[in-house]
Image 1 (cartoon, rainbow, N blue to C red):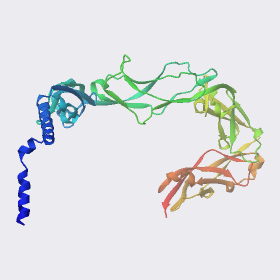
Image 2: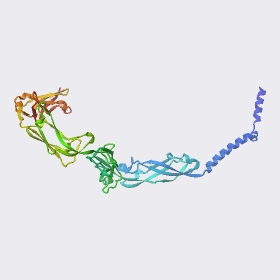
Image 3: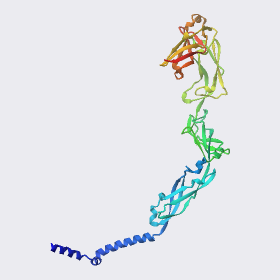
Image 4: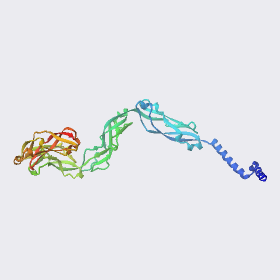
Length: 432
């Protein structure tokens, strides 16, 4: 045991710093490590100064500012990029970025309306290893004012008024929204005289077109007005330009509600204008100008005159200077009229909504006028008159109480007579 201890002590005594220093291998390693440490220390202390410019985006926000309390809004860019130049040791430059800087607007400097220059401040952390030497811009320029708004119509301008192909005609253009709201700085909103959109059709068109509109608010001189925005009810504002094919149409009308036993050739129909120049939708394949349907309930013995507004004609644009077309339907004197008394017993009610009771309280006429040949009229009595009230027609208007509704009049057991005129009844509606 003693012998082993002596061996260990002998090994320990064999190690010495002197031997380590004079060992070439260890000396080389130590020299390299010391050289690196000295080089790093020297490089850090003696590194040259450099500059770096960093772009910092700043959001413009006047929340909780004096301007907000005064009802003053900012009308300018929503963000501003500030270029900040810093100096630092060269080896630190690559690690410095926008997160190391605090850039903000001194918003509380705005207390009145008008154009203002809001100071921009740039700060760095106290422990920052760099120095801010300059930045640009140093101020944020914008217009400040209270907000105002007004509703205005849209005006459409065409770069070329001759954009419809030959043989076609343009109808009345239709806007998806006819008015907009102009909102912004009060003193600038007051300068807006029109809201306009310019439409450019490059090629001539021969069918209806729908285009998107871009709006602009302009003053009396046609110049755009700053610091205002235009708000619309719909996300996409469009203009539809109807295009009609130019043609000549014969005027016509149709008789409806004709009793089955009546010969339509007994009645003559005449028009104040027999033919019209018109524009029609080409795809509708319109060959006649149908001015409408005339129901037999509107016809009595003699001439029956109806005035039809040309502006109400479906899919037809009348090009002539005609506001209305007069239609005359003649019921020959071979027909006659007769009045017959009516009462609540003549009323038939159908399609009563579930949960309701409907009862006739009054017929708003004491008699009806019946038209037919004298021989056919002789065979009729008041019991042949039927007044039909179809509640399905008025299902959206059902409510408790007394209400007035139109009824359809007809003649039972006769296909050669009809009821002339319009009739109504009062009914009492209650819940079951």
